[in-house]
Length: 78
Image (tube, rainbow, N blue to C red; front, side, top):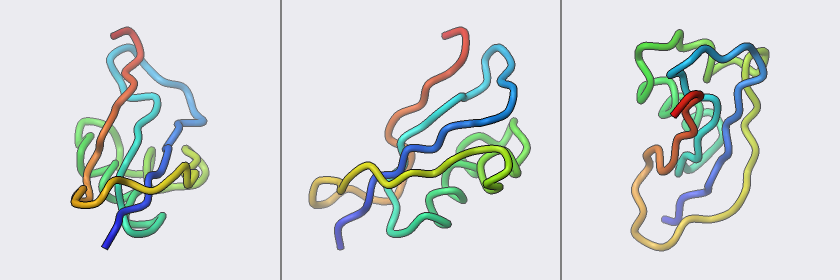
């Protein structure tokens, strides 16, 4: 099964060395949010799981064989 690509972008304040956005491969929107939260355990889960703190937009379809995971992260200050 091909994964969808989601762009998750924080809508709240982002501190230095925190992720401000990421691209996640997942089957659906809510699993994409969970994958994002699990990959950035230093940040509160609600940053990535709550629509009050981040957006999650479908941006495309991953190539065949891509597993659910974070593919790209934009970190403030990096």
